[in-house]
Image (cartoon, rainbow, N blue to C red):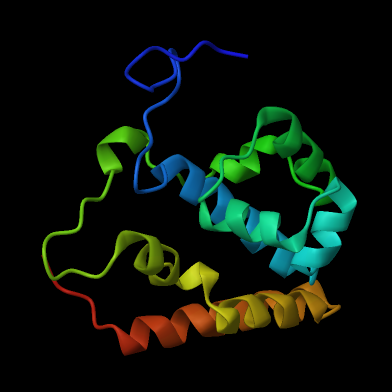
Length: 158
């Protein structure tokens, strides 16, 4: 047990911060993405790692940091390399800390929902796409989606 100085603060303890680290939010979002793509519930993932679904919720929101051994265990259960949890993360996450201005929406509630990858519609679309057994049909659907997206968003000429 660590000694407590007279001022009431533990020596060597991290200072308490109001907002989760952008790295923890990103890693948690990637856990949620993979779990959802596999069609796995928070409860099932929690049982596999020996935690409650509430703890998985906290990890996915970035409210609690996932330790290295737990992240390794999750990578095995979710069948992805550990690097998957850090893919698409900004190269300088400390610079990406978000401080809401007065009147702005709270960071904790807004950040994960801004990412279109985290929307249920996107996840259902990806699941349906991978249920198509023929690779050639999947590729044609992919090309069609890209063509429709290009029509919907006109390109700006240089």
